Length: 338
Image 1 (cartoon, rainbow, N blue to C red):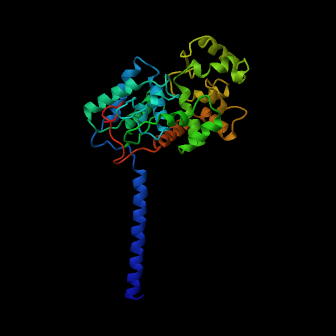
Image 2: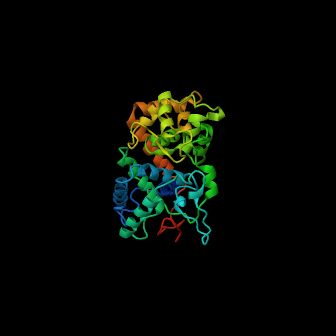
């Protein structure tokens, strides 16, 4: 081979290597926008701070963990995981709060605990940790403190400077919707059927207001009768908790057996016709896709498989359209923009 040919091939090989390195760096950058070590240098104890405040809150409110997990869920489905759900109404900054959207009003709770966490974090690491990351960390602590799995939360989100109440009204899955519509909403944010079933498993702890399932007890689909898919013994218990003329805001445990524990009982409940919310029970019904019912059976048989899938799905959900880099801001107060 002549020296000129050698130079030609060497040059082209070098070019190819450079191109590959550039491509790899692009993919590496896109995948590394969020990472578990994001605050390693400027707020290394942030996870411990979040966990400590949550542990204190759990002493007086056993359901706060499930409530914080739900806030994170409702945040991510609207413009991504950007803490927009935490913003209060503000005429000056033209914020119309998502807190007043139909899926959230008089339902979401725990905002005071988020504020307490933010104050504790700011005292140690002022101006460093976003409210969006606090929600993600609080969700992980809520699950693990209730006996569920733990995981390394990917961090580096920044906070939105706007809210989207209209988006919250149409994007957040409702317990009154059918499975096809809920599946479509999950798909719209890049989540799969497995994500849908695994994340629904979060209903293994927490509470729900009677207004969300009373129709199932007394007037299912306008029939004047109970939902025929409800286990009769379970129906009787629910009727005592939620009388026909009772309070709409009275609470029933999503799981009557281990209401404060994060486990896989939710999936056994569905198979025994003891799903509290209509959308839950529809996951396991004669009209459910075999793919969904097979996942439910697997999760019911093996809690470790459910835990592993739940962790993967929480990470997938936490990756929905985060603001990173110079986008958004780090709010000093989660309720308002800087």
